Amino acid sequence: MKWFDSHAHLQDGVFDDDRTAVLQRAREAGVTRILLPASDLEDARKACELAVDEPMFYVAIGVHPHEAVSWTQETGRQLRDLLKDTNRRAIENGRDAPVVAIGEIGLDFHYDFSPHDIQHQVLKTQLRLARELDLPVIIHLRDATEDMIDVLTRAHTAGLFSDDHPAGVLHCYSESKDKLKIFLDMGFMIGFDGPITYNNAKKAREAIAAVPDDRLVLETDAPWLSPRQKRGRRNESSYLPWIGEEAAELRGVSTGTLASQTFNNANRLFRLFC
Image 1 (cartoon, helix red, strand yellow):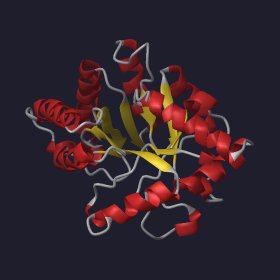
Image 2: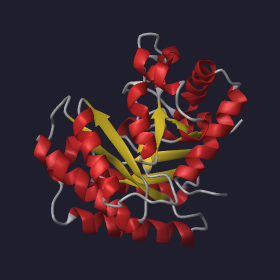
Image 3: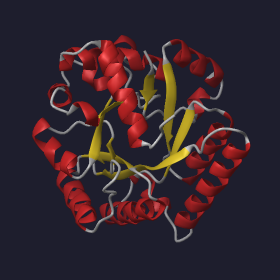
Image 4: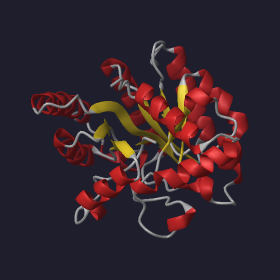
């Protein structure tokens, strides 16, 4: 079985001392591709530097809602330049272009690390940037459901999402299954993480069973949200099969079928066809 960890922050400093071992454990677990989403410009630069030489890594560049206050008039240009430079260097090194998405971007009204109006502004700006660069988006959503639906609906109506490819992914989905259709109708895939292995994560466990086969992707969100087998400890990509096994049980399919479906879906999401 091959697995695609479609959301893992392995560029985080907590992996600096043993990242090589973490990658080796991922390979041994069957994880062959890992998407590194960025939190801000510096985080994006670190992820890109790792991906230039590591063919397992793909990257999403962008500014997380927690860091929205860091956005300046120069940030968009800097992200564009980073994408071009990283992909050029990677191709010169003999690998494919690793920068494949904008993210993670979104709204987070739980912690309010950035004012709501700034989060809105930066999200909308990055949705336009994604359309300009013809890239999918990775959406972070917490305690801002109606605001997010409004922003994405307006973006969809304005033609900011591709008609030929998935619009992006709702990362770490924790909304009700009743809200799924709204996001699916706009072209989004749905990502699930370690919480589906928790018995008290009722909404996520119900929602994952209702996602169409061609819209489901799996994530670890490492170093956070470890599955129950490692709950309370640092998460890593090698734990993805545990999440996959739980997802397969909740959906009533074999683990092999689930692995194949989610691997192919993640490749389609990020337009990787090799």
